[in-house]
Length: 227
Image 1 (cartoon, rainbow, N blue to C red):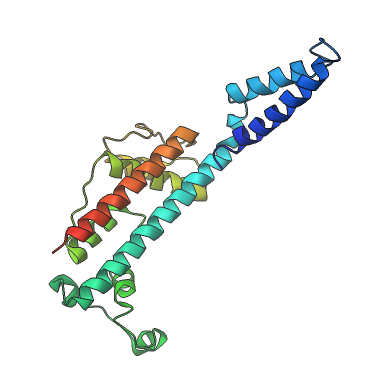
Image 2 (cartoon, one colour; image 1 turned 180 degrees about the horizontal axis):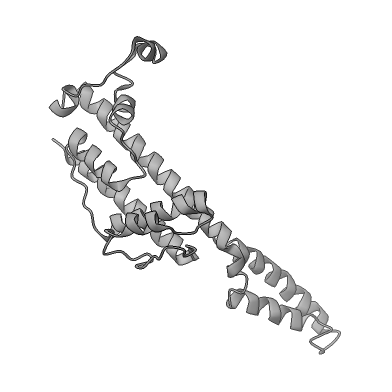
């Protein structure tokens, strides 16, 4: 999706090159043999002339990345809690109290062990789009300490950007500034001002993707290392 314009232009250039080769046999005039058009299209590709029109695509890529990352963390947490319960640990999970009505028990089919992780998420107000909440949940219930560094801070920036893209057409506000104020050091957008429209280019989207992958890999490794 991020390179859609270049992919299309590559195909167009290949077709124009073939046409140009054929027409050159009949005419050396660049306007008549397609040479001028071919040069123009190559310049559009080389200069990324269409990039400004792809702001929306980049923004949606950020939204999708954050959604996928959030879902991955939630799935990891659920799986880990279920496995720890089967092993009879840790004590923090076993001793945790959650308030349930009989209606909620009935609606869950009375299979509470299978619902343990979702109950923790719901009753303890765990949010996987909040990195502090993520770190606290993994620490308290899985015994895993997740480092807060530039990787985490770039993800915090991505989550803040996702919120304003979805709810405010990408326009940062005071809440956005507060949300990222402690996220230093970071690679992505070191300075955000209230009223600014947050835009991402292709390289920034890929950086966010890579940082999320690093974070997930770290989390998997840390969970696997728990005795």
